[in-house]
Image (cartoon, rainbow, N blue to C red; front, top):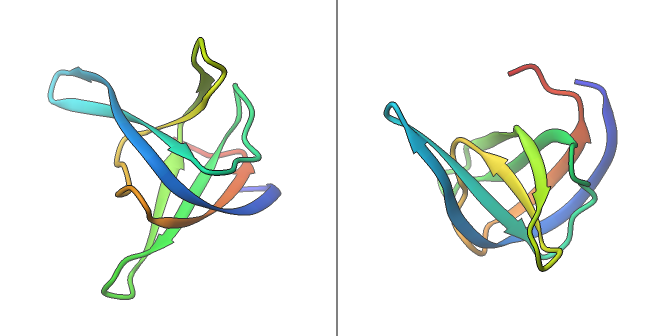
Length: 91
């Protein structure tokens, strides 16, 4: 992945976007983001066990209120500190 921008944030909200054929997609809102609608990239966090978690951001959307949501297949818990990396991902 080619990193364009890196930033720190905290997950503030999670909601289910879709569920089909046993697969779920989630939307996560952050307290701060450098992602714009149409961007892809990753969110990274450290689990309590010390394991590094890397969550691909499949796409970014804005709702009617203008809030930016990061679409992922595996959400992180609210209040999780993350490092966001805006760039190109292979999914």
